[in-house]
Image 1: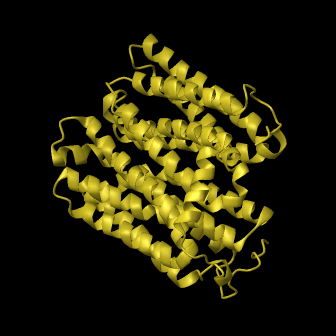
Image 2: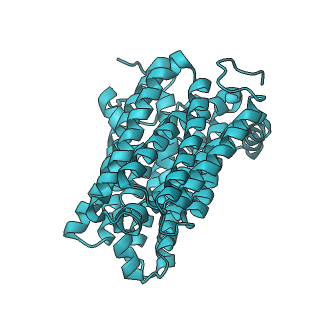
Image 3: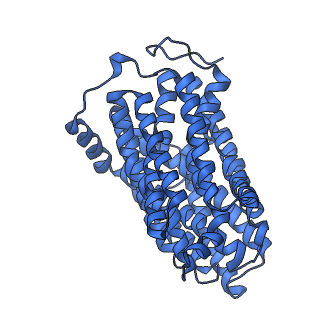
Length: 415
């Protein structure tokens, strides 16, 4: 059984299984807050009388912008005030966003509520990793994160169906009520069962100079910056898919109606399996070889989506589209976690600040690119296919530059 990292508080704490479940719930708030809302896009459009269905994608982008902006704040603040206080502030902000969304009378106000939700949810995502680091180290830390990620990956599978289930008994506003309930459960559970994990001797004084120095190192290290940017490009593809998925599957291209959550769940499940395979192979194959294979395959799959789109007048058979999209998402799951590890390799001295900056940077790049690709939706799968192909090709070019023109090498270049 994993041991507690030396130097943390010795007050009563949850056991291993409960700790993993609590961390998984913290990490899962982000996915739940996005995927749970997708089945409500139609009713939301009707409620606010939106003429352009692409405007619904702003519900995803607004959330991700708030989420990206605050990632860089909560990690730093928690080093000063402690994890528990920072998380509770974040959950309070998130809860306010949920309440505001439930009573929003205009669409701009709903978008503002989504930004606020994202601002608060960033605390749970960032601090979940920090808390695991506080309590565990080495292989034990990797084990906790692996179990938490397995639970976390289930959420995109079930969240759309949960949202559809809520609308069977209530109007779409109550989906935000479900988010609020999840937030309250997390706040009570964490508040009662989790002690402060940041040892007093590890608390730091707030220093803008130290934060700026860490960010400067991340920005000026060639490999870190290039791999981080490549990761942001691929995240843009994921954001475009999530934002446009309801239009593609439910009523814009394939008219699956209530079967949309099933199609979304199948693709998410494939992505989860790929993440598990990546975790099993990375130690023996190496993160460079796996990620280089993944980004090249991702780009070629994007090209296949474009070709199939042209071959079938913008709407290839749904099975073919799902197979190609599932393959792309699986390759994404193999690539992006390894890109993150490679980007963090040279950042040991400023790991906390660098990790916050990488999360902030990739989320904002992904949200902006996802908005551009998603809003190009024209009733076909071609904009999404072109997005995957072009952004994937740009990511390959960045990796080539970072690796001095060599791909699939197991050896790390000098920093």
